[in-house]
Every structure is written in structure tokens, then in C-alpha cells.
Image (cartoon, rainbow, N blue to C red; front, top):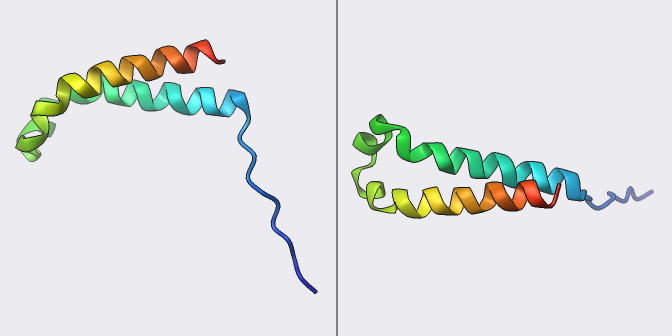
Length: 64
């Protein structure tokens, strides 16, 4: 007796919410000044994270 697992189906709405939340997290990471002191080598990527987060928020909002 074999049990088949159904494939995981992600709806458009779920995908939109996930992109929106990931984008918000990436927007606020540069504002955490203590995060910079924990990982000093990551501070050079704050501008990339900010703009990528902004892009993900816009995409997540657009496809909702």
C-alpha cells in the first residue's frame, strides 16, 4: 500500500504575500545598526538589500 504525496501548490496570492514580506524584511535590515556590528562585512550590501527589497515589495503588491 503506497501513499502518494500531493505536490505542494503555491497560489498566486501566497506567492505575492511571500514576496511582499521578504521585501519588507530586506527594506528594514539596513536600519538595524546593531546588525552591522554583528556582521561588519555585510554593511557593504545594505544598499543592494534595500533596493532589492523595494523591488520585491512592488512585485508582491503588483501580482496580488
